[in-house]
Structure formats: structure tokens, C-alpha cells
Length: 196
Image (cartoon, rainbow, N blue to C red):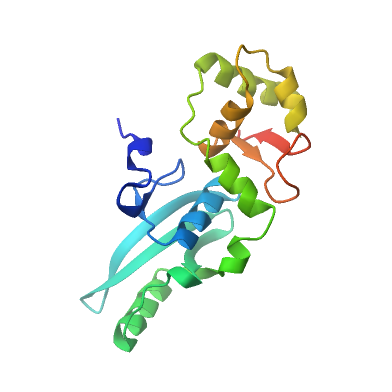
């Protein structure tokens, strides 16, 4: 079985529940953007496209494609942009245009907007946490039965011999639950809901 955790950070590769293959992410701003996309409920999948053909010529793209509810987008993180000469850039733009990818352009300032930036980093720090099956089922069943609820209420309702907070964060990283990381700093009032 493919072990996503084994690839995390290796040679600048990024993996998440929304990536089918490891994505080259050597720039820290791109890595932060990928973490945020992985935790964004509107993002369905994240893919990597190394190259494409334009007029029988292979063009290096090094493109990250974010599939959202409203369509596919090219994740364009400004400080992580590949430097190309004019001809290469023109061919890359033609290839991306033919693929029908609108740019989703992000600056460092947009990526670092609070509270999303700190919340996403905090949640992502639990991506490798082991979640016993009983605890996993308990958290997911509570959300299915009760619907969306504040994080503090969910944590109080879970009966476990261990702190359920790391498990909740880990389940968000594997796209089984959704945390509101945009409205407020992560805390007892953070809304949690099931992905299904």
C-alpha cells in the first residue's frame, strides 16, 4: 500500500489525501498553499502536471492543478513561479490555455492571511497522528448523528481514554471531517462537520 507519510517532506514532495501522486513543492509558500488547499472543503483534488505537448513540442509546465467545486485551476503561487525564458513562457501559457486552466494566483500575503495560515499549520502538524479505529468511528458517528457542531462540544462528547483533539485534527488532514479554519482562530467555537 502507498504510504503517504513516507513521502511527506522527502525531496521536497508534498502528499495529502487529495493528491493522487506526490507533488514537487520545494518553495515554502507553495507548500503552505498546498496545505491550505488540502484542508479547504471546496477543493476536491490536487494534481501535478509535469509537461504537455504544444505543436509536437514537449513543454515543461511544472503545474499544480487544483480541482475545486467550480472547476480546475492552475495554482499560481507568485514567489514559487518557475523562471522561464520568453519562448518557454509563451509555450507554457499556450499549453495551460488549451487545458482550460484558469489561474488561481496567490501572493505570500494572501497565503499568510490569518487565522487560516496559523490554523492550517496547526491542524497539518497532526497529519501523521495515529487514530485508533474506535475513536475514529466515535468522532465520525457523532458528527453524522448530531450534524455540524463546535469543536469544544464535539471533544466533550467523545468518550475515550485519550485526548480526542489530535484525532480530530488528523481526520481533517485525511479529508474525513471539515474544520472552519477561516472565521476564527482554532478553538472551542470552531465549527466541525462531517465530509459526508
